[in-house]
Length: 289
Image 1: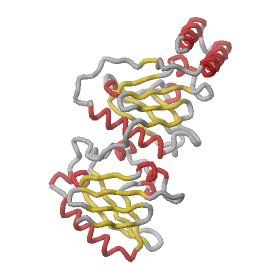
Image 2: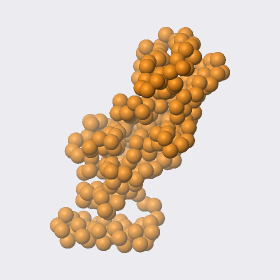
Image 3: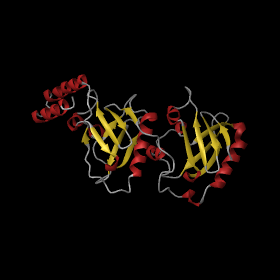
Image 4: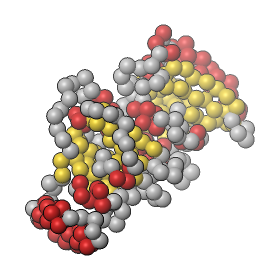
């Protein structure tokens, strides 16, 4: 095909084996689209394409991915608002005939596996390194490990006792993302061994970071979750790594270390840390200088 269909916030370029979605940049474009930039979607990743009436004189061309084909949509788990669905192209109603032409062309190129779940990710995930600020800590992903560094202003005493965390992707089975637009949004890492559904609230789970007003927005935390999920799936067929989460040993700013020790002292004074726990964590922090 090789033609381009431009709509609101995005343009789709059709090729014989894929659709290249280029998202616009602008104050009215959803931030998730701006963060994604562009995405090439192989036709083998799609189950079908539909065209339906939209609002206020528009039509909507909707490419529906196969389950499991796109790590972004898999991580989202149906929680995205329609306006933030990267597979929806909103067009002026006068382009309905042209849009229907492209929909029919794409449907004609879909193979027999279109109605089946994908056995592997077929759409590329956002590339690492990625990071974002949650309410209780900073999450970073370098492509091989996820790290959580707790904020003394938001992290629970449970997380402070556990210390900063680092999880190699080989030790994980998946990622659980609950939208920050929900009341209790969070990102939770799931272990490869044992029960994949952790118990207890995310704010007391050292393998989770919690969101909040202005923290962990969709355009930052969802691409992060998708990138981690893709990396986990990529090593999923390998034998599990016998690696436990480690306390981060990266060098720290002395002022930051002093502030953390001060906060540990507050927890100790409030009875939330024992003498032994306070001494152990203080020693760990001093060792990072």
